[in-house]
Amino acid sequence: MTFLSDRVTKLEESATIAMAQKSRELQQQGIDIISLSLGEPDFNVPDFIKTAAKDAIDENFSKYTPVPGYLELRQAVCTKFKRDNGLDYSPDQIVVSTGAKQCLINTIYALVNEGDEVIIPAPYWVTYYAQVKMAGGIPVVISTDIENDFKVTADQIQNAITDKTKLMIFSNPCNPTGSSYTKSELKSIATVVASTPNFYVISDEIYEHINFVRKHESFAQFPEVYERTITVNGLSKAFAMTGYRLGYIGAPKTIAQAASKLQGQFTSGTCSITQRAAITALLSDPSAIQYMIDAFNNRRLIIYDLLKEIKNIKVNLPEGAFYFFIDVSYFFGKSVNGKIISSATDLTLFLLNNANVALVTGEAFGNKNCVRLSYASDEATIREAVRRLKEAFEKIS
Ligand code: PLP
Image (tube, rainbow, N blue to C red; front, side, top):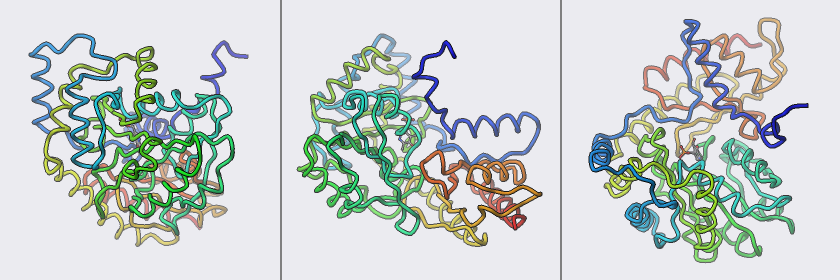
């Protein structure tokens, strides 16, 4: 028996954070670990955004902010939605939060009752599953595989729908696979959603700008699902502003009001300085961040070529985000140093201890066959990491 609540005892710790922690511990022992485990851009915040943050301090933006965010910022979010996504939102449909992570929990708490089913296509971002459970919802996981670039189809969603289905959560481009949906793929999903009463969708588009193959397509663009969609986005990935903590939603007014009501009791409005910096970030021309996207794309192509040289792994060329999701199932049941590798988790531990490279097990993302490699590191580091991985994989027989 524990004095801690059931809620927290049942909560799973984030596997990505756990792996980062393990790598840090080894690094502190003086071991040269390369961590490709975190989803954090390795760039600094662009100077023009830093200036806006400094100005906010000097101009005394230091008081409590309105719970859903400064009006000027919500107007900037509306401008961004119209400019980049063709979406019409008014400021009362926008809620700004302490990271997209809080946008997600606000929305899930606003919509999900105990026992409601929430469809989560796998591989999914770890937090979706944990947050749905926290809200008392039942995650209904739909599996996809590398042969289909890990994309869920409208038919799979249709087959998962029951009279308890309330919500679906997916990311596009996807963490952990980098897959990006085409307009026609989204349209087929929208048709299924629209034909199911009381079925909502969280479309997490935080990797929107990191898309190497096509213009990003928003789920809410289809009029039949506009009233059913909560578009989640934020500054962490596109502007390398992870520590600033700012995410936002565009949603039907009732849902935005509910999210704001919850936020009023959890955290109140997010940091005043961050909000002022966010206005500058969102109103800047998207070309201002193109250098980061070009760098990610360059690394993506380099790693793809290097990974193809590793025998017996399966790898696809991701279209967005900064991850490779590599199928390593060939190695299950094989042994190394007298130990049998029986899962993706075993394999990540072996690679951490023998190649000194930290990846994240696919099990954390609802896929047992794969491991996630994040390429948010410089080119030399990535080349060295993949060299070590190749050497380690060759030892398994
Ligand atoms: N959604 C996805 C798919 C992510 O990968 C992440 C961060 O890793 C987030 C949301 C959370 O972003 P934030 O830093 O804004 O909380």
